[in-house]
Image 1 (cartoon, one colour):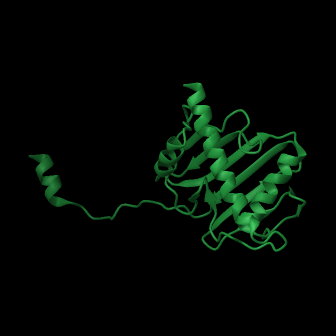
Image 2 (cartoon, helix red, strand yellow):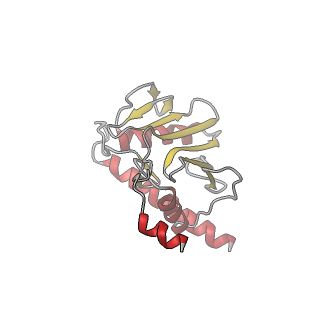
Image 3 (spheres, rainbow, N blue to C red):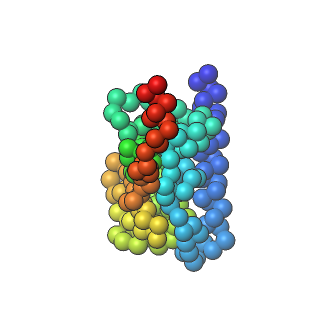
Length: 186
């Protein structure tokens, strides 16, 4: 069972990074934004439902830890993780939509920290705010749909925060179903 999950995870990591790497090959000297939307594990972050994200991660062989807090789901990305990023914590609103996702890990390798920053630059282009020097820094990418990606990889404690500043909220219509109420009282 453990080897099956390890193989599934290795395939997931390989396809994730191959997608990022192939996006950057065409124009190695020119940094252009190849994606206009923030993506979390290949899914658009804006109005992303937790149930859809869980289905996607389960199909990749990743399963959440039990959580005792409402609106918090945690995943292990394996012992090696994605370039050393080994944990993912998803925070959702009361309607079940992702409002924040924190990917973190202790990454001692300068090369892995640098590669993580460079992959994000290839995918999202030059940061909107902050500084990124040879892949290392504290940059922030802002998107038109109200999503944000923040990277902090200047020390061993690396974090990558995905934020949906206005996640979808399911609201009631405000209408009362009188027929349903009358059937309930009978």
